[in-house]
Image (cartoon, one colour):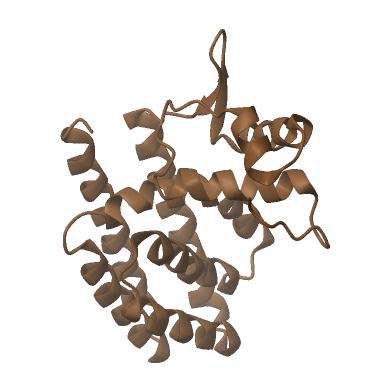
Length: 218
């Protein structure tokens, strides 16, 4: 039975976080049904907080309710995947524009350097996906735009789920690490324009990687 710390978060939020991890890492597949009783038994609780957790995930767009089937992991269409990745590119490009105007924040930059070290040492896809998102969030935070930050934050879990697929491709983590290292180097030099170009190419390559995955019909 799993142990849950209830000091700071509601029980339903803990369950939701657990399910999110299963979805992002691919443990739960698109279209797979979420069994309330299974989670209730796993955590040793009633089905009420599980039901609330599933409701929260439908609000995030990770789960959908299907008549006569119940709650299932949402399946994204090819169009939806492309839209999510294109929106990500637009937000990160706008963020880099703001960084060029405001300058590189030294505190956030140090956090990026630390994340890069962790990324260079990480081989597990799920963990790398989380580190990667944290790295890109640093760029968003550096924009000093609450609007950009809020919109980007809402895409967190769908993006992690999609990027997890990209990193499963052979050599993609190694390629990703190398490109993030270049971005860090350019930002350290104050060369935001070239860093933005590398970032854009990096993000476009993610779309190509996902397209290859989709073409396999998995």
